[in-house]
Length: 339
Image 1 (cartoon, rainbow, N blue to C red):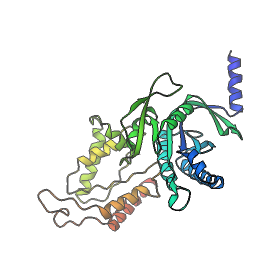
Image 2: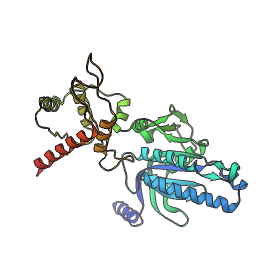
Image 3: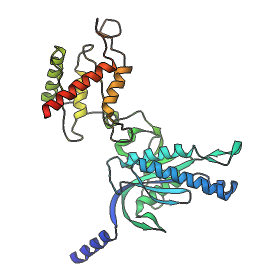
């Protein structure tokens, strides 16, 4: 039996067959059959070509790959060939953008032209991915996951995005969604818990998404917190600038530690400017520094207790140029200490 198992494994590897946890997005144009009847075949073909170009661009931008484009629908994979912890979020973001971009396309011409609408389904789980061909598409997917994504897409009304709750998990806080509801899906023995995605929420960072579900009391980390506050006191006494680096593995509470540090800073002696590196979509060169400068340019100085707005008496709030100079000084100090 061991020999047979090894041979099966070798055969799977040699033929490009992989068993993977993948998020599947199935998106389809709404009312396409009616559109095909109402406009000339050549115009309908041009419309499908435009839609497929949009789909390739959007799905690739969100880290997905198109497994198959057939007729007026597209099946995309997130998590193959590269798996990411936020594949569910990426697939949902892709669906939202795909719907928005498709709505900019027009069927027909003149006053009679109508905007396209889509409906989509998203589900995640383990399936078998193998190399495709001219008949099966770029990839061939086998398993319940793809079927469920297709069923969700079929159940969605025009303009709707249905995603299984487990696919998003805690990342559902990045989106505005309906209350979860149970849906019977053909081919499944149990009902599926489903969300109807309404749009994006105002949450921009993973910590903010987690905080929406509540945070546990802050305990421990007293030594690290004391070190941060000691550096702040030295800065308040007019000593030279300091650069402190908080390092650690993802998820151990670095952001929470800095949040507690900020809460302990007395106002109005201290103003806090935050920048962060977005690992997805919104990233831009030198993003955290750009965010700090923007905050200095737009954020008013805090009002002191019992005093007028604008900061401490005689204090001048830092402008963008001053903040840039301070950042350059801190970076220079960091370079000198690491050489």
